[in-house]
Amino acid sequence: MTAHITHIWRLLKWGRILARHGALRGIERDPLTPAPVRRLVRLARLGARVPRQPRYADAFQAIGPAAIKLGQTLATRPDLVGEEAANDLLRLQDALPPVPFETIRAQIEQSFGRPLEALYARFDEVPVGAASIAQVHRALTTDGRDVAVKVIRPGVIDQFNRDIQTYEWAAAHVEQLGGEIARLRPRLVIANMKRWTARELDLRREAASASELAEAMEAMPGYRIPAIDWDRTTGKVMTMEWIDGIKIADRAALIAAGHDLKDLAARLVNAFLRQAIAEGFFHADMHQGNLFVTASGEIVAIDFGIMGRIDRRARMWLAEILYGLITGNYKRVAEIHFEAQYVPPHHNVAEFATALRAVGEPMRGKAASELSVGGMLDGLFAITRDFDMQTQPHLLLLQKTMVMVEGVAHRLDPDINMWETSGPYVKGWLRDELGPEAKAADTLIENWRTLQRLPGLIKRIEDAFPEQGGAPPPPPLTEVKLIRVGGGWRYALVAVIAAAAGAGAIWGAQLL
Image (cartoon, rainbow, N blue to C red; front, side):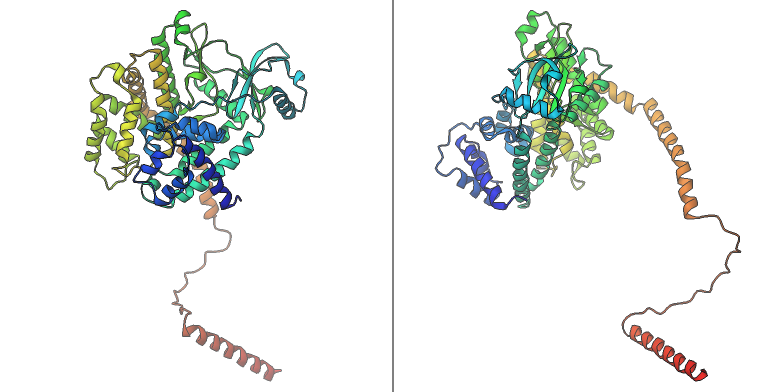
């Protein structure tokens, strides 16, 4: 186990980098910051030249790969780090200098136990992309297929494990201080980041996620996931179909190629809604660098290291919350928050509905370009403190992805109305899931599953209450009240038994 002094030293070192970028100013000035944390912050910035404008994203990038992932996680938490910091952290990019090719070659050959040439007929030495965890090279397989090869950067797994231990240590110590920071649940923030990162560090899991999402989205026209080459995939190397297309961020190139940007934006939003609401399994890293448009107009997603999953009950609540905000049914949205136990029961439903109205009404009737899912989420974060709402870890990725998708869609079509685009899909899904036909189908399925469990239940009852054997049943026994052996009775009973045993022994000796 890492020593306390090691964690403190790492925090001071990272704090020094944050201070030089002005990223500690908000923590120091926030009246809700616990005094011990404020003292540590002052110590970290002692003698540093602090810029007037904080550069949060630059600071996390300077610390290293694990900090980049932490920064991307904190970008989803304006309630925790403040709106200014969250917006700046959205700039975080995974771009890092590439690892030398010989190191990558050694990593691949060690993973497969074979020479590189036995797997790929051609392998481009210059990567097409280098991120904090892995880098991607273009290659040609020995059977002639054009592929992209993703390789984990050597040493990055050990570095992540070391850094995350310190994040966990710091979060636990801060949370035990109680108060507002405990409500924000920093330990859960780090736990979620650790879980997301663990998936990214095992490329077999990323490949499995891509395969699962491809199956789920088969029925969605115009949206595709590249095929995985399982024979050339291990925990540290993943090979998948190469995609020739235009990055969705290149608006001018998309227009020049004749693509309908309004259709692309609407299709992207509906693809996300299908994943999150209908399937409960969604691509949680849908930024512009991970989305391409092919010559045929298909949207193709890549990089499935970060995936989100929501169970059916939570999806029902989510869909009702979205539709309630779209239609202005704040009372129903408030009721769902209480049903889902997001808001403690000692609060008033009507008061919470009024607070939600304060978030939703300013957006109603505005031009499409002024509407924002991100703005709505910021408003919801603002009322969480008043109603003692704890962080909901299973919704963090969803919130982050909603903001991402809105940003990409808005760049494609500045006039897109996220509410109008998502409304019909959400309404249709709720009708299908909550309508009488769906309820009848759910009842039939539940009853059938109950019937399937009956044989096992009967077997367990028979085991507990076996049939009577050949002997007749015993006669009823008279109830006898027993002495409660305790206190003085215990010693008296022991004395009586000992006396009886002694008398029996003497009597037996006389008979002999």
